[in-house]
Image (tube, rainbow, N blue to C red; front, side, top):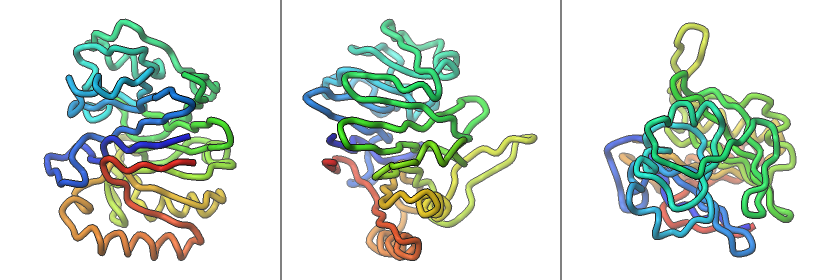
Length: 239
């Protein structure tokens, strides 16, 4: 399995050379490319990537609005995401049922519900191909059934909105927002995940000294016995 971080910027105005495009990941296996998320930055551009399929985590603009004018490939998403994306002109729509492993271009995607937004319910994906196994959740407060979601995972790819500061709010009985990276590293420690990669970068990363922040991240991760790094646009990794 090959991972290409097409974009690593969250839904913020600021951009940098390393974090220009809305967060998206290309998963490649045996010649097939599947794109996870297609935010507004990708409108009119993602076709040149020639994905065989696109998979969506949720319907927020920085994850799905690149599909406003349609898609040149099948698009897979949970029912709640399709219900929110009624305005999209995607014709070849496919349903991903939560907790039901789904084969897409030879790659297995299993959706796990995560807390993030009331208006745009989100999932994270346990993605498997060959011997490679990752969990991808660029926007979340927490993972439902975290133990099952992260069991045997080699790399956790998570939400970089903030490293240590809480970005979680309450709407009635529901928590919304973003878990700090520090919390996500603790999940990895508890579930035995050896490596974490941070994407969907927020203002703390884009406005700060990334070298110092990367060093801080490595220390936080080492304290938990794992490795961690910040992703950047164009970064590639082979498992």
